[in-house]
Structure formats: structure tokens, C-alpha cells
Amino acid sequence: MEKRTIETKEMKNRKLKQHIFDVALKLMKEIGFDNITIRMICQEAGISTGMFYQHFSNKEDLLAYYYDEAQERFDDVVNEKLAGKEIREQLIEFYTWLFEFTSDLGVDFCRNFFSSKNKVMNTNLFHNRIIDITNRAMEDAIAGGFQLSPGRAPYQVSKFLCVMAKGVIFDWSAHEGSYDMTEFGKQLITLTIDGLL
Image (cartoon, rainbow, N blue to C red; front, side):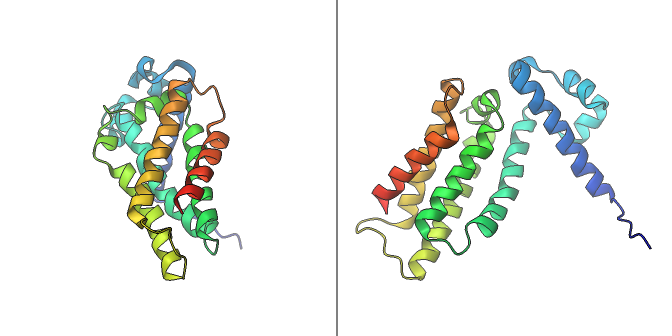
């Protein structure tokens, strides 16, 4: 007998919210964040404006959704890809993943998300989550016998790496995505990690 999965209302809502975000992201890449309207998003997504407002309070709320989605994926990346690796490789892989994930969203999205006007960035939530992951990986490595360079503390190294990563994202956005952020970021983070550890 065939087993059927029942899609709950919550699952449908998550799927619809992701669909709205994906459509908005596509439009952002085509015409820019400032040029899209909620009406355009709804028309392209095949939903009413009321349906949009059930999931997002405004256009800027789409930017915050990125943070929520990224936060969910951070733990998956940490648990799946990084487990059992040396601290240097863990950090390089995590930040390389972050650059790839972020560059896939496009220049216009990054320009708007990584902006001082974005409240999610202003509250340091994104910043703190990246630092927490980096810090936890370093503290686990130290507990396992890794010795950090003299005069360095896990939080200090974590903050340096996080700020550097945001700088790469900002620079890539300012240069209109004219270079491969993932490759450039990986090279820079590798040099930085080698200098810090």
C-alpha cells in the first residue's frame, strides 16, 4: 500500500513563504530591490497582496527572511560538513559556504541586506550568530587539545573573521559582483585564518 504524506498547514505556509521569497529574489536580480513592488511580487508569485502580508509585513521584511533562512542552514552546515575536521578546515569551509550562500542571492540583495539601514544587521544578530558558530568551533578544538596562538582568544579571532567576511561581502557588492566572491573570500579567509591561528 502506498504511504501518503499529509501536508500540514504549517508546511504549506512555509512553502508559500519560501516561494514568495524566491520570486522576490528573482525580481531583485532582474530589476533591483528598489524597483520591485509588493504588487509585482504578488503578480509574479500568483498570490494576492493579502496573502503576501500574511507572510511578510513589508518589502524589507524579505531581507530579514534571508537571515532566518541562513540561521537554519548554519547549524546544518556546522553539523554535517564540519564535524570531525580540524579547526582550520572547519573555519575555511564554513566561511566559504557563507560566501557561496550569500553570493547566490545576488548583488542587489547583498547591497540591501548588508546595509546600515537594515535593522537585522543593526541589531548584530547576523554578526553574533556567525561569531557564535566560529567561537564554538574554536572552543571545541581547544577542548580537544588545539592550542591557539599566544595572545589570541577564541572570541577575538571569531570577531576578526566575521568582520572580515562582512567586508568581503560589502566589497563584492560595491564592485557589482565583478569577481567570484566565493573564491576570493576563500583565499582571503585562508590567509587570515593562517595568520590568526
